[in-house]
Length: 155
Image (tube, rainbow, N blue to C red; front, side, top):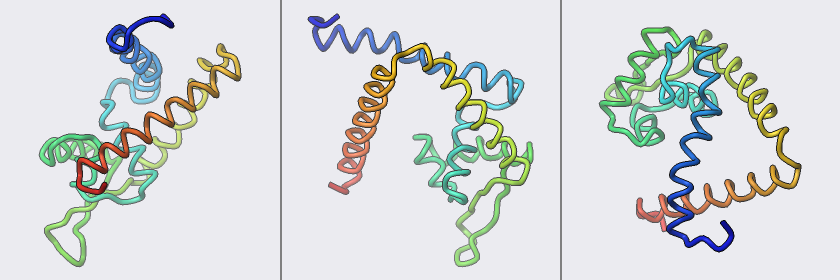
């Protein structure tokens, strides 16, 4: 594929990436949540673990969905007692969400399981391939962050 055009490369990537992502996520969803949580709900839990507390608009922005869609995602997490809502003391129109103890426990299990799964899969690659993959993904993340910042008027 070295001589393939950028268009061919894009088409191949469109085929491969969803399968890679699905393969890496499939077992976590089935084994740890028994199919009760969707990927956006899991992404929200993991992001909340990193950020501690978020406004509903932060959740929507992170997931690239509307505030209404984020509210639906959070509603289901609240109902399952993984997340709690609270009003901002400075402005009661602002709703903040944070992990409950049950949510924190689930995220810890998810992260341990994800690390084990990634180690299992990536152990089949050479150290150089792993380093190259991470280097390229990190570079892509930086490019996308710059584009996002520029689109938002930050650059």
